[in-house]
Amino acid sequence: MNRAPHADGLAVELRNVGYSLEKRQIVSGVSFKVAPGETLMLLGRSGAGKTTTLKLINRLLETSSGEIFIEGRPQLEWDPIRLRRRIGYVIQDVGLFPHWTVEQNVAMVPRLESWPESRVRQRVREMLELVGLEVAKFAARKPSELSGGQRQRVGVARALAADPPILLMDEPFGALDPVTRAELQREFCELAGRLAKAIIFVTHDLREALLIGTHIGLFAEGRLAGIYEPDEFLHSSDAEARAFVDSLGTEHGRDRSSPKCD
Image (cartoon, rainbow, N blue to C red; front, side, top):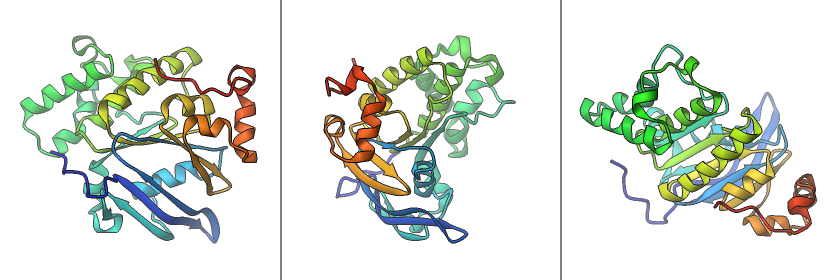
């Protein structure tokens, strides 16, 4: 069962966070807050520090400076295993266990948490239905028997299975064909509105950021250049923001309106 939100209403907070590797500064001075129900899109070019920041949040990497708070509690006070089980994590290549069935993959964290087996089976059913996969058709399949879009849906279902309050997503739809990607973007956009979780989503695609995000955090050269609401981003005078807007071409760059979920 999830704990009640901290009194300040925040799920994740970064305060002046930095990370260096072999004397090279990868991320510097990053600060932001994400509350339940918000989706913060971390947008930037390759190598801008987005994925590194995501990994710092769930301690796949350790901060070199600054502080991270998870549900109002300093990150370093959390047991790393307990911390990661409070945070769903979805990556581009999904990371499903190939020798396990879909059901076994989705059930992984609930079983690690020693849920009763009847509750685990019910949760697997709920999660597969949530992401649009028929239980009777998909539960017994192996990942190799699924399409890319189906594997990505299973990855989302697995990340949500233990009902974590925080969801981290690292370019989860980036490797999919354009049609499947657009379908999953819209499905996830609608899903995020229903789940009311704190979501931090890495992308280099401005259209995706405009469609899904409640806010957009623009990264450039390891720093957070600014945080914008979607329509505010389209009108920003920041040079890096303008470069991303220009990448949209005339469809959205000219009319200066962001795409919305249906």
